[in-house]
Length: 470
Image (cartoon, rainbow, N blue to C red):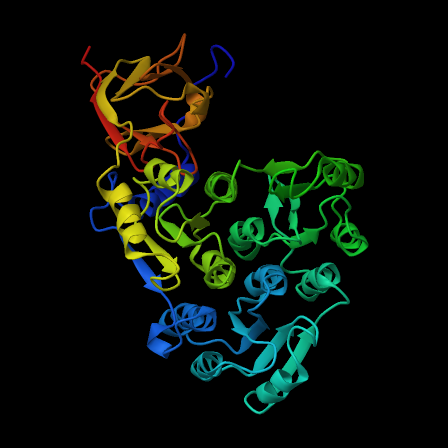
């Protein structure tokens, strides 16, 4: 901010917008770990189908029957191989349609029941006849008026066909950092694509498949169709999954270096993808979805489900919570209010669920404001623990001042500095507040502050101070 610039007080319109955003933020939850946080298990038990087909069916019922008015359009993919179902996440989000699973040769009873409960009138099969046979198609035609199919000669071409089927001028592809973007994952394994699924469905980011060392022609053509020159490609997975050679092809095609989200394990990659969803794509910080990471079976429905509820998919081990998942739950514990577990107790054990819940409710410690002081030229916030000062915006854009009496001092009126556990909002050479002001210091929606240990400061935290009278 230029030295000596006038203090900006909120206009009526700006104040109304900021207060409305603050009201929404305050309504989102308390400024402490929620002791009532709980994980809901979604599996096929109620449908007497304790398998991947029952889990997908129950997810659709929860999302569209219990929490909605049904779904006339439904997507159907093979449950025995992951690629078609994973590519369908983007289309499911674009159409707001559930994803059900089938065997190659016969339609499972749980899938039939879900179609009935959903009130489906059109089913779109994802994949060719080798994945979903003509016999299944015939069964569907006896149940719903319209059945169609999206497929290509291989998984990469099917992925392209899925993206083209979702094309809608009124609903363009999503953006990362203000530019059109896609997700790129290996088509030769499933873990990275599982984690990427909710981003594809919820943020409208096409999920494209690639070979490890060569970008398939179908995927290249899709990028060109979308118009990614100057756009962003987010690679999910390390160089063993998507090689540097493919990354170089992507950069040559788009003119922009791709973003790579990759950890030293599928669980660490999953955590990084979840952080990216929360911090860069506006995912719902109150929600998380847990699924088994060493098998794709129950997690296939996690892409559309995570996209619908706004929560990223965090991969866990069947009988324990891996360290990356523990870290994410600890860091996000003050914001998390609820979550879902996909699959039965054989997929994610009761002990894993208890461990995740305990991490959020009992092991939640994050920096909080322990003291506040104010003068006419500065407000000083002292936190209970050291901060990661790189997350404090020097322009003051993390905070605004709410003076009792209805006046707002907007963030472009002051600067911010951070040292250790202290943040100072100040204006050199000018008056920030008046003597005797009662002031509430509030966080701006979208701001992200972390402690030095990585734990996130509650978004709805409010600090209070009184400026000494003259």
